[in-house]
Amino acid sequence: METVLSISNLTKKFGRLTAVNNLNLEVKRGQVFGMLGPNGSGKTTTLGMLMSVINPTAGSYSWFGEPPTHHVRKKIGAVLEHPIFYPYLSGQKNLELNAMIKQCPVENIPNVLALVELTDRREDKYKTYSLGMKQRLAIASALLNDPTVLILDEPTNGLDPMGIAEIRELIKKIAANGKTIILASHLLDEVQKVCSHFAILRKGNLIHCGPVEEVTKGTETIEVRADAERLNELLMTFGGTSSVARENGYYQVTLRDNFHGKDLNKFLFENGVVADHLVTKKRSLEKMFLEILAEANH
Amino acid sequence: MLHLLKIDLKKMTSYRTYWVVCGLYFLTLGFGAASGMEFLKWVANLFDNFGQKLNITRIPLYHFPDVWMNLIWFGGLLKVVLSIMVVISITNEFTYRTLRQNIIDGLSRTEFLISKILTNVLLSLMSVAMIFLIGLVTGMIYSPSIEISKILTDLEFFLAYFLEIFFFLSYALMLGILIQRSGLTIIFLLLSQMIESIITANLDDYVPGVIPYFPMRSIWNLIDFPLPRYAFQEIRDYITIASVITVVAWTTAFNYFSYLKLTRSDV
Image 1 (tube, chains in turn blue, red):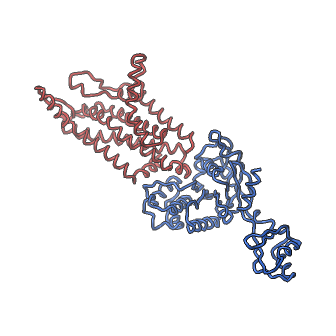
Image 2: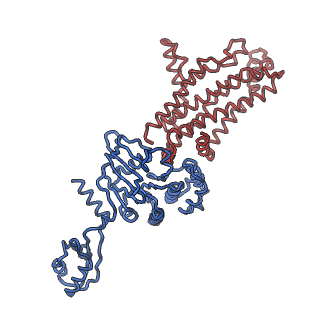
Protein backbone atom coordinates (compact mmCIF):
# COMPACT_ATOMS: atom_id res chain seq x y z
CA MET A 1 0.00 0.00 0.00
CA GLU A 2 1.17 3.49 -0.80
CA THR A 3 2.65 5.40 2.10
CA VAL A 4 0.98 8.77 2.59
CA LEU A 5 2.89 9.97 5.60
CA SER A 6 6.20 8.83 6.95
CA ILE A 7 7.65 10.28 10.14
CA SER A 8 11.16 9.50 11.30
CA ASN A 9 12.72 10.47 14.61
CA LEU A 10 10.58 13.58 14.90
CA THR A 11 11.38 15.51 18.07
CA LYS A 12 10.17 18.82 19.48
CA LYS A 13 11.51 20.43 22.62
CA PHE A 14 10.03 23.52 24.24
CA GLY A 15 12.84 24.54 26.54
CA ARG A 16 13.24 21.71 29.02
CA LEU A 17 9.98 20.05 28.05
CA THR A 18 10.13 17.39 25.37
CA ALA A 19 6.71 17.59 23.72
CA VAL A 20 7.41 14.94 21.09
CA ASN A 21 10.23 12.47 21.50
CA ASN A 22 11.79 10.57 18.61
CA LEU A 23 8.52 9.72 16.91
CA ASN A 24 8.44 7.17 14.09
CA LEU A 25 5.17 6.51 12.30
CA GLU A 26 3.76 5.54 8.95
CA VAL A 27 0.29 6.14 7.58
CA LYS A 28 -0.83 4.31 4.46
CA ARG A 29 -3.37 5.36 1.88
CA GLY A 30 -6.97 4.75 2.86
CA GLN A 31 -6.34 4.35 6.56
CA VAL A 32 -8.40 6.18 9.13
CA PHE A 33 -5.62 6.73 11.57
CA GLY A 34 -6.43 7.64 15.16
CA MET A 35 -3.90 9.41 17.33
CA LEU A 36 -4.70 8.84 20.97
CA GLY A 37 -3.23 10.16 24.12
CA PRO A 38 -4.09 12.07 27.24
CA ASN A 39 -4.15 15.86 27.12
CA GLY A 40 -0.65 17.22 26.64
CA SER A 41 0.73 14.02 25.18
CA GLY A 42 2.02 15.74 22.05
CA LYS A 43 -0.74 15.04 19.54
CA THR A 44 -1.32 18.62 18.45
CA THR A 45 2.40 19.40 18.52
CA THR A 46 3.00 16.47 16.16
CA LEU A 47 0.23 17.57 13.80
CA GLY A 48 1.55 21.16 14.03
CA MET A 49 4.96 19.97 12.86
CA LEU A 50 3.39 17.94 10.05
CA MET A 51 1.65 21.11 8.86
CA SER A 52 4.84 23.22 9.20
CA VAL A 53 3.44 25.64 11.76
CA ILE A 54 5.82 24.28 14.39
CA ASN A 55 9.49 23.85 13.52
CA PRO A 56 10.82 20.43 14.63
CA THR A 57 13.84 20.35 16.92
CA ALA A 58 15.08 17.22 15.17
CA GLY A 59 13.92 14.52 12.79
CA SER A 60 11.98 14.68 9.56
CA TYR A 61 8.78 13.66 7.84
CA SER A 62 7.60 13.30 4.29
CA TRP A 63 4.19 13.53 2.66
CA PHE A 64 3.54 11.23 -0.32
CA GLY A 65 7.26 10.40 -0.28
CA GLU A 66 8.17 14.03 -0.97
CA PRO A 67 9.91 16.44 1.38
CA PRO A 68 7.32 18.80 2.88
CA THR A 69 6.70 22.08 1.06
CA HIS A 70 3.76 24.45 1.08
CA HIS A 71 2.67 22.95 -2.25
CA VAL A 72 2.23 19.58 -0.55
CA ARG A 73 0.12 21.19 2.17
CA LYS A 74 -2.35 22.30 -0.48
CA LYS A 75 -3.20 18.63 -1.03
CA ILE A 76 -3.99 18.18 2.66
CA GLY A 77 -7.06 19.43 4.48
CA ALA A 78 -6.39 20.14 8.13
CA VAL A 79 -8.16 21.47 11.19
CA LEU A 80 -5.85 21.76 14.17
CA GLU A 81 -7.19 22.32 17.70
CA HIS A 82 -10.10 24.65 17.07
CA PRO A 83 -11.53 26.25 13.94
CA ILE A 84 -9.69 29.39 12.84
CA PHE A 85 -11.32 31.91 10.53
CA TYR A 86 -11.52 35.67 10.09
CA PRO A 87 -14.38 36.54 12.48
CA TYR A 88 -15.44 39.62 10.53
CA LEU A 89 -15.82 37.72 7.25
CA SER A 90 -18.84 35.62 6.34
CA GLY A 91 -18.55 31.84 6.03
CA GLN A 92 -18.70 32.20 2.26
CA LYS A 93 -15.95 34.87 2.15
CA ASN A 94 -13.75 32.85 4.49
CA LEU A 95 -14.03 29.87 2.17
CA GLU A 96 -13.35 32.07 -0.88
CA LEU A 97 -10.17 33.24 0.83
CA ASN A 98 -9.20 29.64 1.60
CA ALA A 99 -9.84 28.69 -2.00
CA MET A 100 -7.44 31.45 -3.08
CA ILE A 101 -4.76 30.20 -0.69
CA LYS A 102 -5.24 26.58 -1.71
CA GLN A 103 -5.52 27.61 -5.34
CA CYS A 104 -8.58 25.51 -5.90
CA PRO A 105 -11.74 26.48 -7.80
CA VAL A 106 -14.39 28.48 -5.91
CA GLU A 107 -16.99 26.23 -7.57
CA ASN A 108 -16.25 23.71 -4.80
CA ILE A 109 -17.64 26.03 -2.14
CA PRO A 110 -21.38 25.27 -2.59
CA ASN A 111 -20.65 21.53 -2.44
CA VAL A 112 -18.73 21.60 0.81
CA LEU A 113 -21.20 24.02 2.37
CA ALA A 114 -24.01 21.63 1.46
CA LEU A 115 -22.07 18.69 2.87
CA VAL A 116 -21.75 20.33 6.28
CA GLU A 117 -25.24 21.85 6.02
CA LEU A 118 -24.20 25.47 6.29
CA THR A 119 -25.65 26.72 3.01
CA ASP A 120 -28.34 28.76 4.75
CA ARG A 121 -25.90 30.58 6.99
CA ARG A 122 -23.14 31.19 4.45
CA GLU A 123 -23.66 34.95 4.24
CA ASP A 124 -23.56 35.46 8.02
CA LYS A 125 -20.40 36.59 9.69
CA TYR A 126 -18.27 33.81 11.14
CA LYS A 127 -18.38 35.35 14.63
CA THR A 128 -22.15 34.80 14.79
CA TYR A 129 -21.77 31.03 14.34
CA SER A 130 -22.31 28.52 17.12
CA LEU A 131 -19.43 26.24 18.10
CA GLY A 132 -20.89 23.33 16.14
CA MET A 133 -21.25 25.49 13.05
CA LYS A 134 -17.67 26.72 13.41
CA GLN A 135 -16.46 23.12 13.59
CA ARG A 136 -18.50 22.22 10.54
CA LEU A 137 -17.19 25.21 8.61
CA ALA A 138 -13.68 24.09 9.50
CA ILE A 139 -14.37 20.67 8.06
CA ALA A 140 -15.88 22.30 4.97
CA SER A 141 -12.72 24.36 4.57
CA ALA A 142 -10.54 21.27 4.99
CA LEU A 143 -12.52 19.48 2.27
CA LEU A 144 -12.48 22.47 -0.08
CA ASN A 145 -9.55 21.37 -2.23
CA ASP A 146 -10.78 17.75 -2.36
CA PRO A 147 -7.73 16.66 -0.36
CA THR A 148 -6.30 13.15 -0.44
CA VAL A 149 -5.51 13.43 3.26
CA LEU A 150 -7.67 14.95 5.96
CA ILE A 151 -6.25 15.86 9.37
CA LEU A 152 -8.73 16.43 12.15
CA ASP A 153 -7.70 17.39 15.66
CA GLU A 154 -10.42 16.85 18.25
CA PRO A 155 -13.17 17.52 15.71
CA THR A 156 -15.95 16.90 18.22
CA ASN A 157 -14.48 18.95 21.04
CA GLY A 158 -17.15 20.93 22.82
CA LEU A 159 -20.02 19.66 20.70
CA ASP A 160 -23.35 18.42 22.01
CA PRO A 161 -24.23 14.72 21.51
CA MET A 162 -26.11 15.48 18.31
CA GLY A 163 -23.20 17.47 16.94
CA ILE A 164 -20.80 14.67 17.83
CA ALA A 165 -22.98 12.14 16.01
CA GLU A 166 -23.17 14.44 12.96
CA ILE A 167 -19.42 14.90 12.78
CA ARG A 168 -18.89 11.18 13.24
CA GLU A 169 -21.24 10.40 10.37
CA LEU A 170 -19.43 13.00 8.28
CA ILE A 171 -16.06 11.39 8.98
CA LYS A 172 -17.42 7.97 8.04
CA LYS A 173 -18.88 9.42 4.86
CA ILE A 174 -15.55 10.98 3.93
CA ALA A 175 -13.62 7.81 4.80
CA ALA A 176 -15.97 5.80 2.60
CA ASN A 177 -14.73 7.89 -0.34
CA GLY A 178 -11.28 6.41 0.15
CA LYS A 179 -9.67 9.43 1.74
CA THR A 180 -6.89 8.97 4.26
CA ILE A 181 -7.87 10.51 7.58
CA ILE A 182 -5.66 11.29 10.53
CA LEU A 183 -7.77 11.88 13.59
CA ALA A 184 -6.39 13.07 16.90
CA SER A 185 -8.64 12.58 19.84
CA HIS A 186 -8.80 11.68 23.46
CA LEU A 187 -12.29 10.27 23.00
CA LEU A 188 -11.53 6.56 22.66
CA ASP A 189 -15.03 5.58 21.81
CA GLU A 190 -14.88 7.95 18.86
CA VAL A 191 -11.64 6.45 17.59
CA GLN A 192 -12.93 2.90 17.97
CA LYS A 193 -16.03 3.79 16.00
CA VAL A 194 -14.36 5.41 13.02
CA CYS A 195 -10.69 4.43 12.90
CA SER A 196 -8.97 1.51 11.21
CA HIS A 197 -5.57 2.06 12.82
CA PHE A 198 -4.40 3.90 15.88
CA ALA A 199 -1.34 5.05 17.77
CA ILE A 200 -1.05 5.98 21.41
CA LEU A 201 1.17 8.81 22.56
CA ARG A 202 2.14 9.51 26.11
CA LYS A 203 4.34 12.40 27.21
CA GLY A 204 5.59 12.67 23.65
CA ASN A 205 6.50 9.00 23.29
CA LEU A 206 4.84 6.54 20.96
CA ILE A 207 3.81 3.63 23.16
CA HIS A 208 1.54 1.67 20.84
CA CYS A 209 0.69 1.49 17.17
CA GLY A 210 -1.50 -0.97 15.29
CA PRO A 211 -4.87 -1.77 13.73
CA VAL A 212 -8.02 -1.19 15.79
CA GLU A 213 -9.42 -4.67 15.08
CA GLU A 214 -6.46 -6.15 16.93
CA VAL A 215 -7.86 -4.63 20.09
CA THR A 216 -11.21 -6.31 19.81
CA LYS A 217 -9.63 -9.66 19.04
CA GLY A 218 -8.42 -12.00 21.70
CA THR A 219 -10.15 -13.21 24.83
CA GLU A 220 -13.84 -12.61 25.24
CA THR A 221 -15.77 -11.63 28.31
CA ILE A 222 -19.32 -12.91 28.69
CA GLU A 223 -21.87 -11.20 30.87
CA VAL A 224 -24.31 -13.74 32.33
CA ARG A 225 -27.40 -13.66 34.50
CA ALA A 226 -29.61 -16.65 35.21
CA ASP A 227 -32.09 -17.77 37.85
CA ALA A 228 -29.97 -20.51 39.29
CA GLU A 229 -28.48 -21.16 42.65
CA ARG A 230 -24.75 -21.49 42.83
CA LEU A 231 -24.36 -20.12 39.31
CA ASN A 232 -20.95 -18.90 40.33
CA GLU A 233 -19.72 -22.41 41.06
CA LEU A 234 -21.29 -23.80 37.92
CA LEU A 235 -19.56 -21.17 35.83
CA MET A 236 -16.26 -22.06 37.44
CA THR A 237 -16.65 -25.67 36.40
CA PHE A 238 -16.94 -24.69 32.73
CA GLY A 239 -13.72 -25.75 30.96
CA GLY A 240 -13.36 -22.47 29.08
CA THR A 241 -13.60 -20.21 32.12
CA SER A 242 -10.50 -18.32 33.03
CA SER A 243 -12.07 -16.17 35.77
CA VAL A 244 -15.45 -15.09 37.10
CA ALA A 245 -16.28 -11.78 38.69
CA ARG A 246 -19.56 -10.38 39.95
CA GLU A 247 -20.47 -6.86 38.92
CA ASN A 248 -23.83 -5.07 39.20
CA GLY A 249 -25.74 -8.32 39.61
CA TYR A 250 -24.15 -9.90 36.55
CA TYR A 251 -21.41 -12.48 36.35
CA GLN A 252 -18.51 -11.45 34.17
CA VAL A 253 -16.92 -14.58 32.77
CA THR A 254 -13.56 -14.16 31.12
CA LEU A 255 -13.02 -17.03 28.65
CA ARG A 256 -9.87 -18.80 27.68
CA ASP A 257 -8.65 -18.55 24.10
CA ASN A 258 -10.76 -20.32 21.48
CA PHE A 259 -13.82 -20.39 23.72
CA HIS A 260 -16.82 -18.31 22.75
CA GLY A 261 -20.15 -17.22 24.09
CA LYS A 262 -22.03 -20.01 22.36
CA ASP A 263 -19.86 -22.61 24.09
CA LEU A 264 -20.78 -21.20 27.46
CA ASN A 265 -24.44 -21.00 26.47
CA LYS A 266 -24.43 -24.64 25.42
CA PHE A 267 -22.68 -25.65 28.64
CA LEU A 268 -25.22 -23.84 30.79
CA PHE A 269 -28.13 -25.35 28.86
CA GLU A 270 -26.69 -28.84 29.18
CA ASN A 271 -26.46 -28.29 32.93
CA GLY A 272 -30.11 -27.33 33.08
CA VAL A 273 -29.62 -23.61 33.40
CA VAL A 274 -31.25 -21.19 30.98
CA ALA A 275 -29.61 -17.81 31.01
CA ASP A 276 -31.95 -14.83 30.76
CA HIS A 277 -29.03 -12.55 29.92
CA LEU A 278 -25.95 -13.57 27.99
CA VAL A 279 -23.86 -10.96 26.21
CA THR A 280 -20.48 -11.27 24.56
CA LYS A 281 -18.50 -8.16 25.45
CA LYS A 282 -15.75 -7.20 23.11
CA ARG A 283 -12.72 -5.60 24.59
CA SER A 284 -13.03 -1.87 24.23
CA LEU A 285 -10.29 0.43 23.07
CA GLU A 286 -10.79 2.31 26.28
CA LYS A 287 -9.86 -0.71 28.33
CA MET A 288 -6.85 -1.45 26.18
CA PHE A 289 -5.80 2.19 26.25
CA LEU A 290 -5.83 2.22 30.03
CA GLU A 291 -3.98 -1.10 30.10
CA ILE A 292 -1.30 0.17 27.77
CA LEU A 293 -0.93 3.40 29.70
CA ALA A 294 -0.69 1.45 32.95
CA GLU A 295 1.99 -0.79 31.45
CA ALA A 296 3.91 2.22 30.24
CA ASN A 297 3.85 3.65 33.73
CA HIS A 298 5.82 0.74 35.10
CA MET B 1 2.83 38.01 -6.89
CA LEU B 2 -0.50 39.52 -7.87
CA HIS B 3 -2.13 36.43 -6.44
CA LEU B 4 -0.57 37.10 -3.02
CA LEU B 5 -1.65 40.74 -3.10
CA LYS B 6 -5.19 39.66 -3.89
CA ILE B 7 -5.20 37.33 -0.90
CA ASP B 8 -4.23 40.13 1.47
CA LEU B 9 -6.71 42.56 -0.08
CA LYS B 10 -9.46 39.95 0.27
CA LYS B 11 -8.82 39.90 4.01
CA MET B 12 -9.08 43.67 4.21
CA THR B 13 -11.94 44.59 1.95
CA SER B 14 -14.64 43.30 4.28
CA TYR B 15 -13.12 44.68 7.46
CA ARG B 16 -14.77 47.91 8.52
CA THR B 17 -11.82 49.13 10.62
CA TYR B 18 -9.59 49.10 7.54
CA TRP B 19 -12.05 51.22 5.61
CA VAL B 20 -12.42 53.69 8.47
CA VAL B 21 -8.67 54.11 8.98
CA CYS B 22 -7.97 54.13 5.25
CA GLY B 23 -10.81 56.62 4.66
CA LEU B 24 -9.62 58.90 7.45
CA TYR B 25 -6.07 58.82 6.11
CA PHE B 26 -6.91 59.70 2.54
CA LEU B 27 -9.52 62.29 3.59
CA THR B 28 -7.07 64.01 5.93
CA LEU B 29 -4.36 63.79 3.30
CA GLY B 30 -6.67 65.24 0.65
CA PHE B 31 -8.28 68.01 2.69
CA GLY B 32 -5.08 68.79 4.56
CA ALA B 33 -3.07 69.16 1.37
CA ALA B 34 -5.74 71.30 -0.21
CA SER B 35 -6.04 73.71 2.73
CA GLY B 36 -2.63 75.33 2.43
CA MET B 37 -4.16 78.69 1.60
CA GLU B 38 -6.21 78.58 4.79
CA PHE B 39 -3.00 77.90 6.66
CA LEU B 40 -1.36 80.92 5.04
CA LYS B 41 -4.33 83.09 5.99
CA TRP B 42 -3.91 81.98 9.57
CA VAL B 43 -0.22 82.85 9.46
CA ALA B 44 -1.02 86.23 7.92
CA ASN B 45 -3.55 86.87 10.67
CA LEU B 46 -0.86 86.09 13.22
CA PHE B 47 1.46 88.61 11.56
CA ASP B 48 -1.38 91.18 11.55
CA ASN B 49 -1.62 90.97 15.29
CA PHE B 50 2.01 91.98 15.50
CA GLY B 51 1.33 94.93 13.24
CA GLN B 52 3.05 93.50 10.20
CA LYS B 53 1.65 92.84 6.79
CA LEU B 54 2.14 89.55 5.05
CA ASN B 55 1.05 89.33 1.44
CA ILE B 56 0.04 85.70 1.16
CA THR B 57 -0.40 85.82 -2.58
CA ARG B 58 3.35 86.44 -2.79
CA ILE B 59 4.05 83.09 -1.18
CA PRO B 60 4.09 80.47 -3.98
CA LEU B 61 2.92 77.62 -1.78
CA TYR B 62 0.96 75.97 -4.59
CA HIS B 63 3.00 77.16 -7.53
CA PHE B 64 4.77 74.65 -9.70
CA PRO B 65 7.26 73.29 -8.79
CA ASP B 66 7.08 74.38 -5.12
CA VAL B 67 3.78 72.58 -4.66
CA TRP B 68 5.40 69.15 -4.99
CA MET B 69 7.87 69.45 -2.15
CA ASN B 70 5.43 71.34 0.10
CA LEU B 71 2.70 68.72 -0.23
CA ILE B 72 5.09 65.81 -0.01
CA TRP B 73 6.63 67.09 3.19
CA PHE B 74 3.20 67.64 4.69
CA GLY B 75 1.90 64.26 3.46
CA GLY B 76 4.82 62.53 5.15
CA LEU B 77 3.50 63.65 8.54
CA LEU B 78 0.36 61.55 8.10
CA LYS B 79 2.14 58.25 7.46
CA VAL B 80 1.60 57.28 11.10
CA VAL B 81 -2.14 56.93 10.46
CA LEU B 82 -1.52 54.58 7.55
CA SER B 83 1.01 52.59 9.56
CA ILE B 84 -1.60 51.96 12.27
CA MET B 85 -3.67 50.22 9.62
CA VAL B 86 -0.70 48.01 8.79
CA VAL B 87 -0.27 47.21 12.49
CA ILE B 88 -3.93 46.21 12.79
CA SER B 89 -3.68 44.08 9.67
CA ILE B 90 -0.68 42.08 10.90
CA THR B 91 -1.52 41.81 14.60
CA ASN B 92 -5.02 40.56 13.71
CA GLU B 93 -3.36 37.61 12.02
CA PHE B 94 -1.71 36.76 15.32
CA THR B 95 -4.68 37.40 17.63
CA TYR B 96 -7.11 35.48 15.42
CA ARG B 97 -4.34 32.91 14.76
CA THR B 98 -5.20 33.13 11.08
CA LEU B 99 -1.50 33.24 10.20
CA ARG B 100 -1.32 29.69 11.51
CA GLN B 101 -4.33 28.62 9.48
CA ASN B 102 -2.98 30.37 6.35
CA ILE B 103 0.19 28.29 6.62
CA ILE B 104 -1.77 25.09 7.29
CA ASP B 105 -3.87 25.85 4.22
CA GLY B 106 -0.78 25.96 2.06
CA LEU B 107 0.72 29.44 2.12
CA SER B 108 4.44 29.49 2.85
CA ARG B 109 5.67 31.89 5.51
CA THR B 110 7.59 33.81 2.90
CA GLU B 111 4.50 34.10 0.72
CA PHE B 112 2.55 35.37 3.70
CA LEU B 113 5.15 38.07 4.33
CA ILE B 114 5.28 39.00 0.65
CA SER B 115 1.49 39.42 0.62
CA LYS B 116 1.79 41.92 3.48
CA ILE B 117 4.74 43.74 1.90
CA LEU B 118 2.89 44.02 -1.41
CA THR B 119 -0.02 45.66 0.39
CA ASN B 120 2.47 48.13 1.88
CA VAL B 121 3.76 48.89 -1.61
CA LEU B 122 0.21 49.42 -2.81
CA LEU B 123 -0.64 51.77 0.08
CA SER B 124 2.56 53.73 -0.54
CA LEU B 125 1.79 54.02 -4.24
CA MET B 126 -1.76 55.15 -3.44
CA SER B 127 -0.36 57.88 -1.17
CA VAL B 128 1.97 58.99 -3.95
CA ALA B 129 -0.91 59.08 -6.44
CA MET B 130 -3.08 61.03 -4.01
CA ILE B 131 -0.44 63.73 -3.39
CA PHE B 132 0.37 63.88 -7.09
CA LEU B 133 -3.28 64.41 -7.96
CA ILE B 134 -3.85 67.11 -5.34
CA GLY B 135 -0.58 68.79 -6.30
CA LEU B 136 -1.55 68.77 -9.95
CA VAL B 137 -5.01 70.25 -9.31
CA THR B 138 -3.94 72.91 -6.81
CA GLY B 139 -0.90 73.74 -8.92
CA MET B 140 -3.12 74.28 -11.95
CA ILE B 141 -5.38 76.57 -9.90
CA TYR B 142 -2.77 78.70 -8.13
CA SER B 143 0.21 78.84 -10.49
CA PRO B 144 0.32 82.16 -12.35
CA SER B 145 1.56 80.47 -15.50
CA ILE B 146 1.58 76.82 -16.41
CA GLU B 147 4.79 75.61 -17.94
CA ILE B 148 5.53 71.97 -18.57
CA SER B 149 9.14 72.40 -17.53
CA LYS B 150 8.09 73.74 -14.14
CA ILE B 151 5.57 70.95 -13.64
CA LEU B 152 8.26 68.38 -14.34
CA THR B 153 10.72 69.96 -11.92
CA ASP B 154 11.32 68.33 -8.53
CA LEU B 155 9.36 65.18 -9.41
CA GLU B 156 12.17 63.12 -7.87
CA PHE B 157 10.66 64.02 -4.52
CA PHE B 158 7.88 61.56 -5.27
CA LEU B 159 10.44 58.77 -5.23
CA ALA B 160 11.62 60.05 -1.87
CA TYR B 161 8.03 60.25 -0.67
CA PHE B 162 7.39 56.66 -1.75
CA LEU B 163 10.52 55.51 0.07
CA GLU B 164 9.47 57.44 3.17
CA ILE B 165 6.00 55.89 3.34
CA PHE B 166 7.22 52.41 2.43
CA PHE B 167 10.00 52.69 5.02
CA PHE B 168 7.52 53.51 7.74
CA LEU B 169 5.00 50.83 6.76
CA SER B 170 7.81 48.26 6.70
CA TYR B 171 8.81 49.45 10.17
CA ALA B 172 5.20 49.08 11.39
CA LEU B 173 4.95 45.60 9.85
CA MET B 174 8.16 44.51 11.55
CA LEU B 175 7.03 45.84 14.93
CA GLY B 176 3.72 44.03 14.51
CA ILE B 177 5.45 40.75 13.73
CA LEU B 178 7.85 41.13 16.65
CA ILE B 179 5.32 42.34 19.25
CA GLN B 180 2.19 40.60 17.88
CA ARG B 181 -0.23 42.68 19.99
CA SER B 182 -1.93 45.66 18.41
CA GLY B 183 -2.11 48.00 21.43
CA LEU B 184 1.50 47.52 22.44
CA THR B 185 2.71 47.79 18.86
CA ILE B 186 0.87 51.07 18.25
CA ILE B 187 2.24 52.57 21.47
CA PHE B 188 5.75 51.51 20.53
CA LEU B 189 5.29 52.85 17.02
CA LEU B 190 4.17 56.25 18.29
CA LEU B 191 6.99 56.40 20.81
CA SER B 192 9.80 55.36 18.44
CA GLN B 193 10.47 58.92 17.29
CA MET B 194 10.72 60.12 20.89
CA ILE B 195 12.88 57.18 21.99
CA GLU B 196 15.23 57.77 19.10
CA SER B 197 15.40 61.50 19.85
CA ILE B 198 16.38 60.78 23.45
CA ILE B 199 19.11 58.41 22.29
CA THR B 200 20.46 60.75 19.65
CA ALA B 201 20.39 63.72 22.02
CA ASN B 202 22.64 61.79 24.36
CA LEU B 203 24.93 60.65 21.57
CA ASP B 204 25.27 64.17 20.18
CA ASP B 205 28.17 65.00 22.49
CA TYR B 206 30.17 61.88 21.72
CA VAL B 207 29.59 60.55 18.21
CA PRO B 208 27.52 63.11 16.29
CA GLY B 209 28.59 61.46 13.05
CA VAL B 210 26.29 58.43 13.47
CA ILE B 211 23.11 60.42 14.12
CA PRO B 212 22.06 60.84 10.46
CA TYR B 213 22.03 57.07 10.15
CA PHE B 214 19.41 56.51 12.82
CA PRO B 215 16.17 55.22 11.22
CA MET B 216 13.75 58.03 12.12
CA ARG B 217 16.36 60.68 11.48
CA SER B 218 17.13 59.15 8.11
CA ILE B 219 13.60 59.87 6.86
CA TRP B 220 13.72 63.44 8.13
CA ASN B 221 16.94 63.80 6.15
CA LEU B 222 15.30 62.54 3.00
CA ILE B 223 13.09 65.57 2.44
CA ASP B 224 14.02 68.93 3.97
CA PHE B 225 11.38 71.11 5.67
CA PRO B 226 10.43 73.37 2.74
CA LEU B 227 8.73 76.38 4.36
CA PRO B 228 11.87 78.29 5.50
CA ARG B 229 12.56 79.10 1.85
CA TYR B 230 9.74 81.64 2.04
CA ALA B 231 11.58 83.40 4.86
CA PHE B 232 14.65 83.89 2.68
CA GLN B 233 16.46 80.88 4.10
CA GLU B 234 18.39 78.32 2.20
CA ILE B 235 16.84 74.85 2.06
CA ARG B 236 18.11 71.69 0.42
CA ASP B 237 15.83 71.37 -2.58
CA TYR B 238 17.38 68.17 -3.84
CA ILE B 239 17.72 64.62 -2.57
CA THR B 240 21.07 63.28 -1.44
CA ILE B 241 22.14 59.82 -2.50
CA ALA B 242 23.38 59.11 1.02
CA SER B 243 19.95 59.69 2.56
CA VAL B 244 18.29 57.47 -0.05
CA ILE B 245 20.77 54.68 0.60
CA THR B 246 20.26 54.95 4.36
CA VAL B 247 16.47 54.77 4.04
CA VAL B 248 16.59 51.86 1.58
CA ALA B 249 19.04 50.01 3.81
CA TRP B 250 16.77 50.41 6.84
CA THR B 251 13.70 49.36 4.85
CA THR B 252 15.50 46.23 3.65
CA ALA B 253 16.64 45.51 7.19
CA PHE B 254 13.10 45.85 8.60
CA ASN B 255 11.63 43.47 6.05
CA TYR B 256 14.51 41.07 6.55
CA PHE B 257 13.95 41.04 10.33
CA SER B 258 10.28 40.31 9.67
CA TYR B 259 11.33 37.44 7.43
CA LEU B 260 13.73 36.02 10.03
CA LYS B 261 11.19 36.23 12.83
CA LEU B 262 8.38 34.73 10.74
CA THR B 263 10.36 31.84 9.34
CA ARG B 264 12.04 30.87 12.60
CA SER B 265 9.25 30.97 15.12
CA ASP B 266 6.42 28.55 15.76
CA VAL B 267 3.07 30.08 14.93
